Length: 306
Picture 1 (spheres, helix red, strand yellow):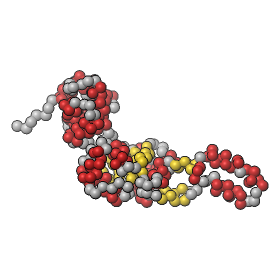
Picture 2 (cartoon, one colour):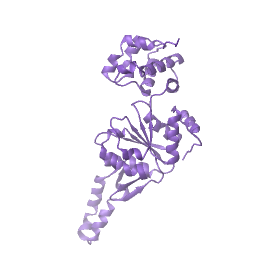
Picture 3 (cartoon, helix red, strand yellow):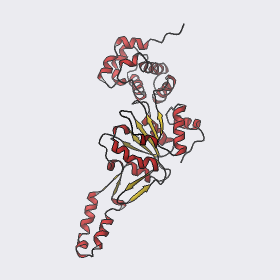
Picture 4 (cartoon, one colour):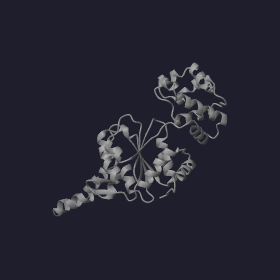
């Protein structure tokens, strides 16, 4: 496993992978690695929670495994299921032996159909059985799953193990680096939170946003990148943020910069802003809220204090 001597070393490694973490976030990640604890990241959509897991898989040189959560997610989709078709073929092949053989032959075939080769591994089990150096497991948008699924996760989060009735307890060969993300559409169970380190991931400050845009969209002129960072930062701040259901995240600011480059835009103006509002906002009401008058106001540099 790749280790880091300090928080600063981790910040530098993440930056080399294209992820610009502030010191508080990097400290949370550093401690999660040192203490071998899952890390729960909460925050608005588009602030970089998922991208952190991707960057970590690069800097740690570990395989990234992703469990995308949704309403109705079942344990078998997260952990394992059996290849029933292959098991049935095996049992049919053994049928003649069952009919002619002793009673214990039935039990023998039952044991055989639960062999490792018939086991279909899903992300949780893949993470536990990943060979060295191990895996990075991203449990994405865990707040979209239901409470029974949260309860199912407790054994994994607390002990890095799971119980499979037909096989027994499977413990981690190498403890996976585990990142859980939540957009806080609902409150997570306290039992889940107790098993994790916690960090609230907020929108970045203007300078960090500019660094991200410049790194992700290197073809953007410096002046345009600065304008994008300035505008998005202002849109997230009062009084402008009150006009929108959801302010643009980092993902949207990067996509907006790419779109502006594709349009050969050198300088932002109100018309370009309103024409490309669908890049920054994903709600019809938010797109409509960005009027020409608001765009003009946002583009005005803030008044210096007298």
